[in-house]
Length: 482
Image (cartoon, rainbow, N blue to C red; front, side):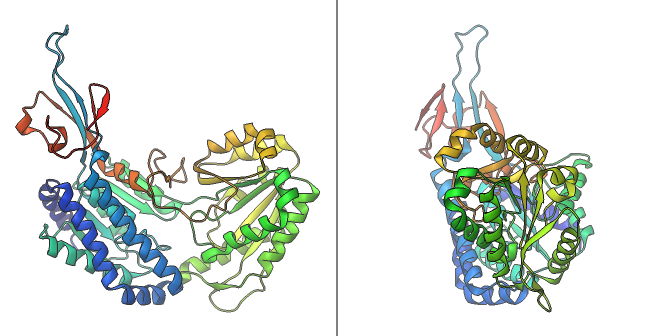
């Protein structure tokens, strides 16, 4: 397989695709969604065979995938996302100010690495591909080896949409090679201008290193996981303990814990209410049903990690299902003290699967030290009453510095696809915490600002012309106007 040729084809297609009108790009995204829907039955069946995920989950995920394609289509049809800014010439100024007009333009070919745990929404036709195509970038997808047939089906839908819209044949290309070397070659190729990745810390870090060592470094937008700390404040535990135990047991075991927003770390101040919560949580986990994980590799890694952590002297198991046979995962929840947690940094590392660690802190001061010891996260959750949020205001403010999304009184699993969503966070949750991989602002990863100085009106992109033919919102001499 000649990666260089593939990337050159992507660069050539970009020269045409970047000039396609927003209306045509929007119609292209909508056509992809239609093509995906037309083969829903076979895609869900195939993904189920490859990932062990149930049809209900896969149907919901495929709907999310088609909806986010349509959402990006609506975004670019409206058009204001390009952030057009105009500062008109002021020849009377001293010195004279030239005419300056700025907007966001696509960067070029983007490499998208499919995720193992979301065969539709974060893979071949998922949010990374949708946002890049919406921006005007061409895409090369490296399909995930955990679901190769599903990935190829999604690419087939995209290819049909390309043909129907009469776009360049190489607007989107698909690479199915399983080797790590192929991923490296895609990142280091001179034609590549950006990378999207959802997966492990080691995988994301490796891609970041490849990109930074290029003659021309490029951005890598890698989402690499998180333990998503949840802080249970005292009054909430006293007043809502049983309900909270059920809610978070369900969140920990949802999809066998194979979500990057799984609540893997639970924090609280030692009290009788916390002990009662721990007892009820352990009971709920013990009563949960084991199930198969996505594939043998993930199951083996989870089994190994769970066995190692539960064997530590500092760890007390408070709930687990009976050990199943075969490839089924074994949900578990454990407990340790704040002091032990602070002494063992490995306890703060993600164990991908249906597992969570409850940390009992001696007091508010120790809880603060535990929070300050944590690295960057995708989410952090506040579980508290109005009384709690008043008393522990400073700790909640500290939580907000840890993650891209802070949640009040809800489990973190579940990521809404919308304009306000942030699915990102400080390193090592992601490689660039200024951006999100979910929601419409994910498009900003694949663009750069360009300023046009003293261009004649006929030479300008439509978004910057005097007559505003697109009818978009623009900042003109510091005032927003259509």
